[in-house]
Image (tube, rainbow, N blue to C red; front, side, top):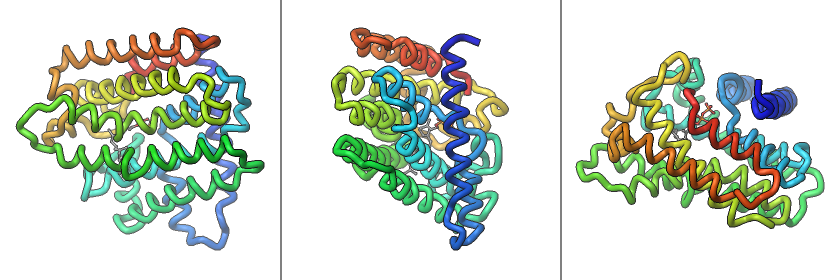
Length: 292
Ligand code: GRG
């Protein structure tokens, strides 16, 4: 194992333990089924890319991870809700997620919708209960609510749905979808750590997050085309079946791989002047080379 793999593992385990602890303390008076469905949707199978990214950015900026844990969890709660809703019949209609049945397949559609709603609300409830909430925490919360909201991730999802079966290839629309649907939830953990530190490297980290998010989504499109079901834990070739606008449909497979590499290079360029950038650079490389 490389030093980076050990660091990833450390924060992955720390996060999962914190998550288990929080889930074990959910309000006893709430219906069991909603708590079970929430836990089912968020536990097991996720790579925890966003929380780990938050902790690694924090490490670079000298913020202890226990000062970021509430935000790291809030981001993963929002990410998990978006996956639950994305899998619903009205959206991507997928039976599998994270190597198991998607939440609505396991609990039925009504509870699936409500579990997504519950995860989203709990994200904000959890973070607002952080002890000693400072002005920097408020700034971080603004990023979270804006990036996940109607002009962020939801905007990306709306245009993504509208783009199905478009005959005209449109690179600008593709980048709009990628920025909003995917990159904003990858930028959020980085910019939240940045806000909590006081934003001394805001522009560099913004650019790093943007290019990392775009790299992540292009690789996701490539994996949808040539990945492995057992490794990915979700259905393949969904994009082609639904006639989605993707990097592969717009650029072709070979050029999509080249584009991913170009954005990865821009990640490196963006933070080269920040001291202690090694872990974030390794993270970006791992995202470029990921198989799941
Ligand atoms: C329903 C409001 C709403 C939004 C949905 C997240 C999303 C937007 C759609 C899911 C499909 C998709 C391709 C999203 C882009 C982001 C992405 C690649 C998500 C998968 O993230 P991973 O690979 O998943 O980090 P794990 O399971 O490892 O957490």
